[in-house]
Image 1 (cartoon, chains in turn green, blue):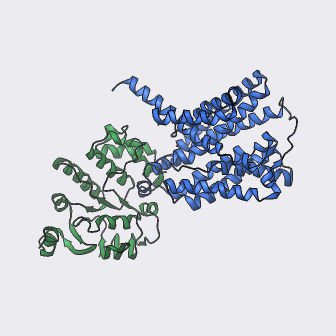
Image 2 (cartoon, rainbow over the protein chains, first blue to last red):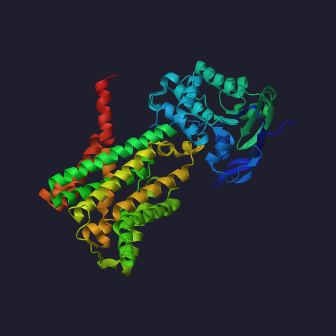
Image 3 (cartoon, each protein chain N blue to C red):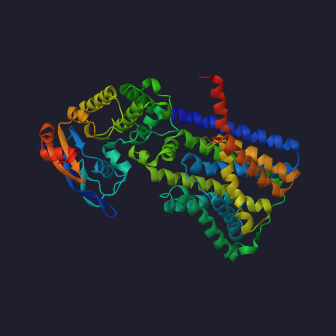
Length: 238
Length: 322
C-alpha cells in the first residue's frame, strides 16, 4: 500500500469556547484528488489554516511526507511541499503579477535558474503571460484566482490545498480553473479541493470528505458519499 | 539578484557613490564656509536616519517610533568608548553600528511579532526605557550630560567640521548603497511581500520573522552609525539632545515625503525637508523648523500620499496617457 503523503490524526482546534475542529482524521495519497465539502462554518478553512501553519492546532498529529509538522512555521511547511491558496485572493498589491510569482521561486528554489524566466513560464501556463507587468488591482476576479494558483504552483508543491479557488466565478471561468487543477494533478501534485461548487467538486474529486460542525462525517469515493442520507441532510436539512 | 547583475550593481553603485562624495566635498570646499559644513552635516545625518528608518518602515511596513533611541545609542556609545579607551571617531562609528544592530535585533525579537499600533507603541517605549537608563548612568554624564573634546584639526581637511560633514556624507552614502542593495535583492522582495500581506508571504515560503529581524538589525546599525559622530559634532551630549523627538519625526517624515518604496525617496525627502529646516533655522527661527516640517508633511499627506516619487510616477503616467 502507498504511504500517505498527508496523515491527519484527531485534529482539534478551538477558538475560546467554540470548537472549530474536533477529532478530524484523514489521509491524502501522493497524486490524489480529494474534495473537501461542508456547509459554511463547518471548519474547512480552519482545517486548511491548521495544515498550512497559519493557525496552531490544539490537539492531534499532522504528518506530511513522513514528518510531523508540530511547531513548524508556515514557510518551513511550504518547503516540505505543502502549498495552499487563499479563499480571497491575497496578491501582493505593490508588486507586479510577475514579481508576485517570483517570490516563491526566490525563497524556495533560488538556485533553480533565473526567477523571472521561471515565473514567466508559469504565468504563460496559467494564461497570465500577457498580464505579467500588470498590478493585481488591474486584474479581473478570474485572473486573480489564476495568479493565486500560479503562486502556489511556484512553490513546486507535492500537495496543494486549493481553498475555494472558484468562488464567484462564471461557469466558463470555473472550467478554466478546473483545467489548471487537472494539469497540476497530471504533473503529480496531489490536490485537496475545498469548494462549494458541487459541479466542480464532483468533476474533479476521486474521493470526498464531508465536514459538518468541525467533524469529518463522511470519507469515501465521491459518488458513494453523495448518495449518503446523512450528507444530504447536512446540506439540505432533514 | 544574479551574480552578474549583482556585480554590475555594486560596481556602478560604488562608482556613483564615490562620484557623489567627491562632487559634494568639492562643492562644499568651494563654498569655503564652516557653516556650510554644519548644514551639510545635519542634512546628511537626517538622510542616513531616514534611509535607515525606511528599511523597516518603508520596505517592511513596520512603523518605528523609536528612531531616536537607536540614534542616541550610537551617540552614547561614542561617549562611553571615548571616555574609557579614547578611541578615535571611526572606531566609535563602527562600535555605534554594532550597538545599534544589537539593539535592533533585541527589539525586533521582542516586538516584530506585533503589528500596527502595538508595534509602534513598543518602539516608542524603547526610547523611554533607554533614556531613563542613560539619565541614571553617571559614567556617561547622567542627566547633566558629558563633554567631549574634539581635535582642532585633522590631516587632509581644512577643519574638523569639514571632516565630520564628509564623514556623515560617507555614512549616508553607505546607508543608501545598503538600502539599494536590499531593494534589488530577494530580501527586498520578501520585505515587500511582508508589507503587503504577511500571512500570504509566509504561505509562499518567505521566512518572515528572519527577514524582519534582518531589516530591524540593519536599520538599527545605520541609525547607531548616524548617531555616533554627534558628541564630536556638538562637543557635548545630554539625554535631552540625544533623545530629541525631532530625530524620529524627521526620520519618519522624510521617507514619507520622498516616497517609501525606494532608497531614493528618503534621500529626496532629506534633501527637501533638511534644507527647508536649515533655511528656517538661519533666516526665520529655530523653533519654526519643526513647524515647517509639520506643514510640508501635512501637505504631502493630503496631496501626494505616495511622496515625491509617487507624484513623479503619476505625472509620468498621466502624460503617457491611457
